[in-house]
Length: 165
Image 1 (cartoon, rainbow, N blue to C red):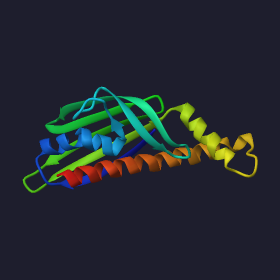
Image 2: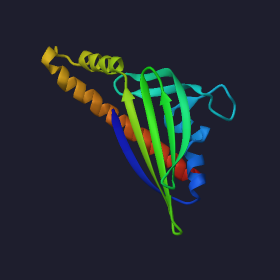
Image 3: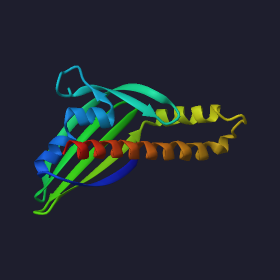
């Protein structure tokens, strides 16, 4: 599992930040989610993924959005869980008189079978045969690529929120 955090200094009230992060347009932009329900995401949405080494894949994802107040701090959790990749984003907001600061943490968990497919794809690109003891190196390369993938998702999400506010 990969975890990436992004700090955002944004204009607006905490409620506006949380509404922006969970809006269907931003979820579509950041996570590639689309739904047959016009204007909002259904609990089950189609997700277009651009995966390391494997390219474009589509999955059906269960989407959940929950709000909490943790010690007076608003917190929003957005989960998109599918058979290939699952994402969990947690946004906490600290609002002062001077500014609003949000922290967006994105977790990305690739299914073991997907990691194996990516490893086999990477292996097939090599002109030389890989020994079986090279699996650890291949796995590390694939997991590093998923770290970069999660960072891109977090960057797209933060940029979309910043543009909206």
